[in-house]
Image (cartoon, rainbow, N blue to C red; front, top):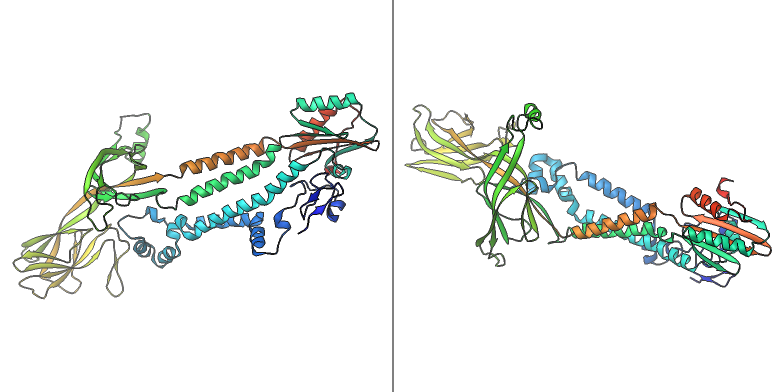
Length: 538
C-alpha cells in the first residue's frame, strides 16, 4: 500500500493517523476528533493496515488483545480440569496410569485418561495453548512497539498547531515570549530532568520516554518465562518425578535413562515426646497424638555401567550413600532426591496354611507376595494350591457373585484359591482374607487359614532436575523490571511554539495527568504563559 505524504513533506506509512513528524491529522476522523488519540502516537499499526494475504490474517488475529485474553481464559479453564482428579505424578508408581484411573474412578477416570487430563501440563494441546499465548505476545508487541518507536524517534520540535490544539492540556494566547522567559522555562525544565530541545521558535521538553517501553519489557519477560515453561517438556531439561520405594528395594531413578539406581536401606521415623519441647509441641501432641520430629530414608545410589547397552541387565556400582531428610536432599550431577512423604506398615506378604477343617492339621504354608504372585504353590506330597484370583482392594461381590476390587493397591487383599489334595484331587475352592475364610461353591474339607502378615515402610522420594530455572528466573526478573518501569514513572512532554503572533502550549502524559499539570504550573510560574487547561473536563 502507498505511503501518505503530509503537508510538511513527511512520507508516512499507510494507515497513519497523525503525521510522525509534525503531528497533523491525516484522516477525516482524526481531523474531527476533539482530542487526538496518543496511545501509539497516531502511528500506523500493521494489523490495521494490511488484511489481504494469509500472513496478514494470522498477524491480525494474534495481534488482537481480545484474542490474547481468550487464550489466557482457555489456559485457566484447562488448568482447572487438571485439578478434578490427581495428576499422574501423584498416583502410585507401581500401577500404570491407564489401569489406575479406570479402576479407581471408573468410566469417568478412563475418559479423563484418554483425553490427556491425567498429565495435563505435559500434554500436546496444553503446550500448544502456551505456545499460542507466546505467539500472541510476540505479534501484539511487535505490532505496537515498532510504530511507536518510529513515531517517537521522528517527532519534530515544532509540532503543528492543530496537533497542539487537540492535546488534553492546552493553552494559547496572543503575544510572544521574551528571551528571558524562554531561558527561565528551559532552566526550570532542565532542573526537573527534562530533555529540552528548541528549534524554529519552538520548544519540546520530554522526560521518562523509557517508561513507554514498560509493557513491552513485560511481554519480553513473559515470552522468556513461557519459553522456559515449554522447555520443561523437552527431554533432559526438566524432571520432577515421585518414586515410591519400599524398604529393601532397588529401583531405577526416573529421568536418568537407566544410568542411576537407588536402594532404600531403611526408613526411620522419629516423633516428639511429651515434655521434650513443652512450649512448642505439647499442645499439638495432646491434640493430634503424634508430631513428626524427623523422617528419613537411608539410601544408596548406584551407577549402571550397562545403561548404554540395549537389552543388557544393570551392572551397578556404588556411587554414594546418604540419609535423605526433609529439606536435606541427596544430590548428584544435576539431580536432587528429596524426602517427600512415607507410608508405614504397608502390606508386603500374607501367610496362609492349607488346613484340614476337622482335625486342624496343617499341610504346608503358602507365602503370597502381594506384588508378585505365583499361579500355583506346590506343598509336596500331593498337596498344591492354585491362585484363581487376586483382589488387592476387595470391595464385595457383584450380583452375579463375582469378587471386585476398587483399586489396584493392596489395602484389603482377598484371594480365590483352588486347594488340591490327595483326598480332593479335583480341588476345592476357598475365598480367603485376613482372619476370614469363605466357601463360595459349597462346604469344603480343607481351608486356607490366615497365619500372619508381613509389612514394611515405603518412602516417597521426589527426583528433581530443572535446567529451566535460570530461564524462568530471567523471565521473571525482566517482567518485574517492566512492571517497575511502567508503574513508577510516566512519559511527560511539553510543547511551546510561537507562530504568527500567537503562542501555543500543550502537555501530554501517558498517565498521572494531575502530576503533569502541577509540574507544568511550577515550570511556567512567573512567565506570561497562562495555566494549561485540562480539556478532558470540558
